[in-house]
Length: 138
Length: 443
Image (cartoon, rainbow over all chains, first blue to last red; front, top):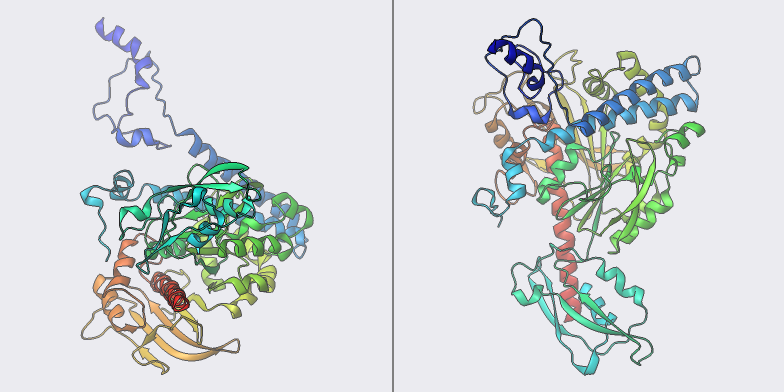
C-alpha cells in the first residue's frame, strides 16, 4: 500500500532527482554538472511513467543551435547557388558566409571553454587580493 | 602630455593655483607643475581628456597625493565669469604614446590563440568590454586593446550577398573610417567604433573605445590601406599554407552538422581567388611573417599535427632586432636532439639564415617538429639569442602557462610567444625614446 502511494507521487518528484547512472545525459547542463547520478535506481511500478527533465541553460544552447542551423542552411544555399556557376561572385560570397559562420561557432566554443578552464583563474577573478592570487613582477 | 592639456584647459578662480602632479609610472618621473591662468578656448578640448579616464591608471610607485582626483573650477567665456563647471582632472599615469600593431590573419577575430598569448605576455587577460554588446569582437586588458577589423565592414552579410562580394574584398570595407579611427586612437582620443556582429551578420550600434597603451588591429586588411600602414609601429602576417589550412579546417568543421569534406574544400577554393588578390599581397609589408607549413620530418604526412613553422623577420626595422641562433647573419642548421637531449619521434629541427623575401633583406628562423617535454623547451630557449626576455625561462613559462592552447608543443606557439616578447620590446624602446626626448627638451 505504501509502495503504491509512493509510486503514484514518483512521477511528480522524479524530475527533481538526478538521473540514474545508466542513463546517458544528452545535453549536459551547468546545473547537472555538480549533481552526480543516482546509484540506486528506484524500483518503479509498471503503472507509473517517470519523466526525467533536464534543464539546459537556455541562452547558450539556443544560440549554439541557432548558429548550427544557420551553418547548415548556408551550406545548402551555397551548394545551390554554386551549382554550375563556380566562378561567380555570388558563389564566392555564399561560401564566404559559410566560412564566417563556422569560424563564429568555433570561436564561441573556445570562448566557452576558456571561461571554464582553470579553477584558480576563476577564483582569482573574484578575489584578486587573496594570497593564492598575488603576482610578483619586478 | 596629459597634464599639460589639463593645464591649458582650465582657468583658476582667485589666482590660486593648486599643484597638479603629473606622474609617469614607467619612467618613474614625477613632475609638479602649477596651473596658471590660461583661458579656456573651447569646451570640446576638455571633454576628450576627461573621457580618457581609466580608473585603473595608477602611479603606484609614488605618493598617494599624485593619484588624487582634483576638482578644478573652470570658467567659460571671455574672461567674465559665465558659468562654472567642476571639472575632474585626472592624472594619467604612464605615457600618452599609443603604439599600434597590425596582425593580418584569415581566421576571424579575437582569435585566438595568437591574441591570447600576446596579451598574456603584456600581462593580464584580455576580455570583451564589460556591460556592452555581448557579440563585440573587441578585447581589452590592462595595457592592450584588440580591435577586430571586421568592425569596419561597410557591407553587412546581406549587402555582400547582394553584391556578390566576399568579406576579403576591399569593396566590403570602409578604409577611410578605419584610418580615421586608428589615427584618433593613436593620438590619444577615444572613438565610437562600429560593431560587426558575426552571429547576426549585421552592423550593430558603435561602442566607445578608449586609447590604450598598445592597440592591436587584427583582421584581414590591416596593411592593405597605405595610410593605415603608416600608422602601424609593427606588423605581423600569419601565413598558413593551403595544406595546413585544409587540415585545420577539417579538424574544426567536420564535427559540425552540415559540413562534409566537399563543402570544406569548396569553401576554401571559392575564397582563394579573393584571398590571393587582396590579402596575400600584404605579406611584403609585414615586419614579421609567420609561415606555417607541413612538416618535412614525416614523409607524406597529411594530418597537419606536426608543423614546420618559419618566422621571417625583416632586417632594418626600427626598434626590432631579429631573433637568431648562435651567430647572427650566418646559416645554421641545428638538431638539438642527441646526447644531451633525447627527443621522441619525429624530433625537432631548427634552421636559421639570411634570405631575401619580396625584395627585402630578412632573417629566417625555422622550427620543424614538436616539443614533448619541458626540458626540450628550456634547452631550445637557452640557445636562442635576441629573444627579449626579462628573465631566463620566460618563454618556457609563457608556453607552460598556456599549455592547453593549440600549438603549444610546436613552432606556432613558440614563435607567437617570441613575437609577443618582441612587441613588448618595441613598446619599451619607443617609450624609452620618448621619455628621453621629453627630458632632453626640458633641459
